[in-house]
Amino acid sequence: MHLVSEETRWECQRCGNCCTVPEWGRENMKMLLGHELQPNGRCFYLNEKNMCRNYSERPLICRMHPFHPDKESLKIGKPDFSAGKLLISKSCKGLGCGEKVFRNRQLMKKLGRIAEELSAKIKTMKSGTLQELFYTR
Ligand code: SF4
Ligand code: SF4
Image (tube, rainbow, N blue to C red; front, side, top):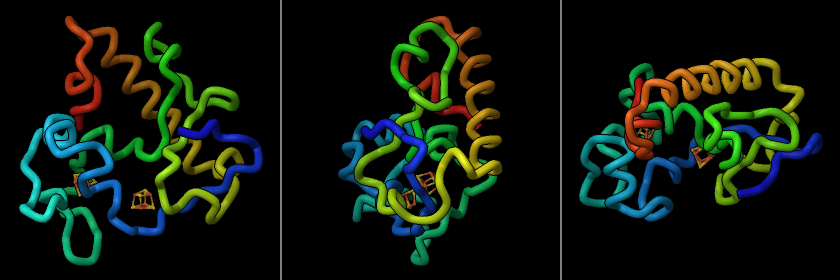
């Protein structure tokens, strides 16, 4: 994971890597997504054009990727996607492409909504498993 700086740029390149093992590990990926993978390791919903066939219903982890709040903010139930806290997956092919992350209003709005969803989810969780936290629609 990389800390997102004022200079960090990102734009999805539709490479499909984040919807394919081994980035997360087959079992972890199945657990987080809550559904099967294709025999070649691609998510069941990933089509041949690297588009999600379940886009509007995809799990929260997919809506959030490649961005993540830092662990401390998650622990206290206040996921923080702001400067100095926001992390991005180093393996994402979109890192370094497109607009600066913190200048991208649409993206920041989306991450703000996800932070609220995560926060509400954490409040209702009985036990803190990753699946409970991220496998929400
Ligand atoms: S790895 Fe990054 S660039 Fe590739 S599809 Fe996923 S989010 Fe987009
Ligand atoms: S549900 Fe969609 S976005 Fe999520 S891993 Fe599968 S194809 Fe990718």
